Every structure is written in structure tokens, then in C-alpha cells.
Length: 478
Image (cartoon, rainbow, N blue to C red; front, side, top):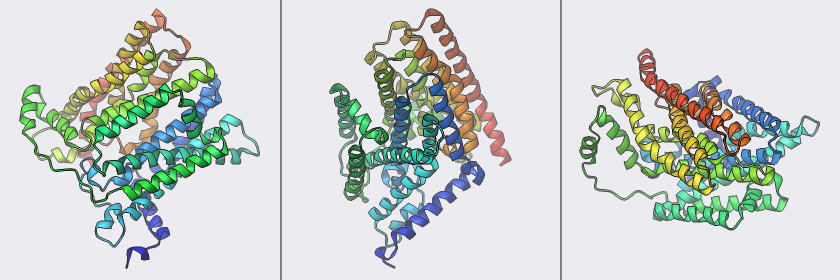
């Protein structure tokens, strides 16, 4: 059987079947099947709520497309799970995507079909439920199916553009371009777009439903070209150069010199030695900062209302706690600690300390950049810093209590995802409303928000301290 003898349609069908099997086995059939329903409910209800508060339709449309682009940027990494670039994240797995090493299949062809499968699969499971929010924007009528369909195609195009961008960056990396050069190029591009006032033009291209047919066609063609060239440029034989490692464990563990220091050291070194190292949490937080900053610019340009930057960014950047904890646990499993004389509660305590050590600078730098860039008042900046610290601890505690050592997996578990979303909304929604309504914040509002941030931080500490015993009991039952 030759590589050309396997039809693309058959290969695509096999990949679809394995994707469904993987998710249903991880989360249970009905829990995963309900995930699109949860997304639809959240998207429609959030749209209705934003409309009721006077948010412009253009802002909502732009925000949904920003989410689609962001999810596309994340999804673009999935196709490289079998490569050395993400080996330290996923471990040495035997995935269907890796079958090109044992079967007569072209690695590039298999990778291209895999990415096409992801675009179609998530386009239905994730993007289509988001598109239903267009019914809330335009109202129900005979034309609603057409409106939803066009909106879905627009979101799918934005999602595919995000995927193609990630694939291009990874392909460039396999050609021995250093990460710092890629990061510098991306940073300069963002600054150039902002400085030249081209943000509106970029937004119009990435929101095809609001632009011209020519712009939408150009984005579609550009996405296909970038994806095709990236797959051609991708070097499947690329491997990271061998490195000589010193005994950093003993040195770092001795420097920490507190209880659970060896476990904390292990978490920190696992992160540092993985592909991308300690920069991954910073990149995640920076992407979140860029998306939120772009959304603020859209809202300001349409409504003439700019939120209090300290309060707004302090509340939202705390969400990077989820991604930071995700990076700290991607390399670990609770089973790996059974051979050591430590309790599961000790492991969770060590993760909490490692989260603080990594998470504090991860959110502090983007927040400082945001308050300086948007000229936040002193009171606003101080309140935002309190919110950032408190909400980050709260989001961390909520994540670890609900998901344990598998924060990435519960994204497709309808029950856990809904619980996490409600928990985030309880803290974040009132904060964002306050940040938009009272600008600059009054003394009374600043005091109330500061107390709220401290309270949420305490709640997060309590949740994270109870996570260890909770998951230890569940682990013993299983």
C-alpha cells in the first residue's frame, strides 16, 4: 500500500473518528456532546446581555471574531503534537498523527489533512455555536438561517486565519530561526500596526462579515496560501539541538529552602526545560493583553467610551492564571508521584507555590505595560493591581479545584466548563461593568473593588488548599 493509494477522504474520515473517540473517552459521551450546547448558551446569553447594556453590535461582532482568531492560534499547535517541538508538553505519545513514521504516509500530507480535520471539527463543535449569537443581534426572522450561516462562515475564516498563523510560525521555527527573532518580528508587527493607525484596517479584514467581499476573498486566499507554503516549508525532521544540563535542581532547591522545595523545583525545571521554556506563560499573557487591548480600541472608536484601564485590565489579565497553571501541569500527572513518599496534597501545595513564582511576573509585566500605555490614573492603577492579584489567585483556585491536574482537558467537558465559566463570571462581569460605568473610579467604588479583590483572593486560596484533599479522595475511589 503506497502513500498515494490512501485517499484523502478516507484519511480524513479516520482522523474524524479518532477525534470523536478521544474526546468521548476523556470526558464521557454526553458531557462532550453537550459542550457545543454550553458554548451556544454562553454566546447567545452574553450577546443579549451586552445588547441590553448598550454595547454596539459592531463591538460584539468584533469580540466574537477575536475569540475565533485566538482559538485558531491555539488550535494550530495541535497538529505538531508528535513533533519534538511539543514533545516535552505531551510526552512520547503514539498518536495517529505520528503514523507517518511507521506507515508509507507523507508527513506533510498527513499533517495537512490533520489540520483540515481540526478546522472542520472545531468549526462545527466550537465556531458554529458561537455563530448562533447572530440571531440575537438581528432578531428571529425567515432570513435567520442565512444570517447565521454567513456569520458562521465569517467566524470560520477568522478561526482558519489564526490556525494558519500558528502553523507558519512553527514552520519558520523548524528552519532554525531562533525564537527571539520570531518574537521580535511579531512584536514589531503589532507595534507597527498600532503606531501607523492600521488597526482598523486589520480588524476589517479579520471580521469578513462586516467588510467587503473582496477583503473576505483576499483573507481566504491568503489563509490558504500561508497554510500551503507553511506546510511546504515545515521540516518534519527538525529536532531541538542537544543541550548540556548542569545540576540546576540541587542549586535551585537549595536556594528556595522551604517546605516542599524539591517538588516546587521540579515544577519550575520541567517548565524551563520544555520547548519554549518560561517564555510560554509570558506569551500566553501577552496574547491575552493584545486581544483585550484591541477590543478596548474597538469599543472606544465605536461608542466613545473607554473603560478604566487599571480595573479593566486587572480583572481580565487575571485569566492568564488558567494558562499559567496549564503550562505547569502539562508535564505532570498525579500517577508520576506515587513512587515517592509524598502525598497528593503536598504535590498540590507545591504547584500553588510554583504558580505564584511563575504567575506573578507573568501578569505583572503585561499589566504594567497596559496601565502605562492607556495612561491609567494612580487610584485606578492601584485598584487594578489589587484586582489582578486577587482574581489571579481566585481563578487559579477555581481551576485547580475543578480540574485538578488536567486543566486543559476540562475545556471540552460541558459540566466542568460551565461551572468554571459561572465562577469566572461571578467575579469578572461586575468588575467590567464597574470599569465601564464609572471612569475614573470614585473613592467609594475603588474601596469596594479593592475589598472584592481581596475577598476573591482569599476564596481562591481556600479553594486551592482544599483541592489536594478533594482530588486525593477522588483518586483513591478510582
